[in-house]
Image 1 (cartoon, one colour):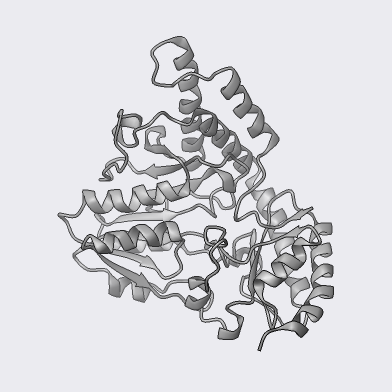
Image 2 (cartoon, helix red, strand yellow):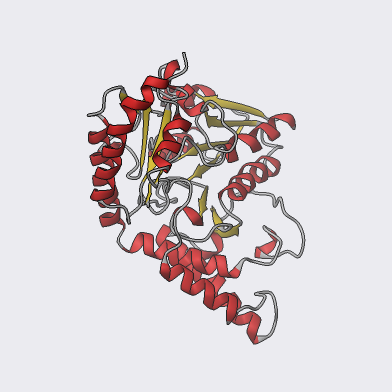
Length: 383
């Protein structure tokens, strides 16, 4: 099997599985319990918070554990909007955000908030002039994705954060870092980031767990109510096995980040070079450090994305026809529309996404498979 859909999810690392098994079978207590079994469980929650805080150079009390990226984004957006609605009602984002950002923002629009969607250029990057024009005295929140999940474009978060704070230091700056955490070096405080969303299963951790970094002093209302766990910000018994696994996965990702990122970038560039040798293929992602190390979007003239996906699947090569969050409901990608790719290619674009475990041999086998499949599949296009 050649698995090239790591932006959708990753295989759990052996070290992560081991700690999850241990917590589930041995240290299974409720971290809110007052006895030793509960205390032993609580230690895992505390250690993971400390480990993530150390990676990000923040305080452990600024880490809020969630069920994953979607909950982190919802908490950041809805919680911030509600907590700051007396200060204004304008929220600024981009036209290429993930559905877990767009959907809560649509909900907030229905509640009377104004949402401005910044356009992007052909490379998927916003322009500072557009951001400056969008900001006004009613702006309370700016939410910008760090690495786009479909094309791998990297926003200059540090420059955006500095710019936002220079205009109004009270505006909350939220970053969806779900595709960048574990791939890029991120220091929220240096980047003027107030909140940052992360998901465990994108970095060889378990599904169903993530975290939201919330800078101390940032006004955010809870959106889940109950027993008051996590200082009242997110009620519900913590997912201790998942949190423990998340901590191990985060440490694995950042213990040798530079070498891992370099390996993925080399594979990405090898894949792009190979794709460009096939007639009718255009690449929508950047080589080298201009794009994320693990994502390649490519369009195949006269070949439907789902047809290509299933043809590769027959060869045990697994890719994506777009964002996994909407792949079971085929639709035209809003990201591809936003970067203005040729209309005829909107239904002919796929995503390859890598991890540190992928090899040059797998990339070469994928290119060879495409080289044999594409000419055949293009003959059967519907006109």
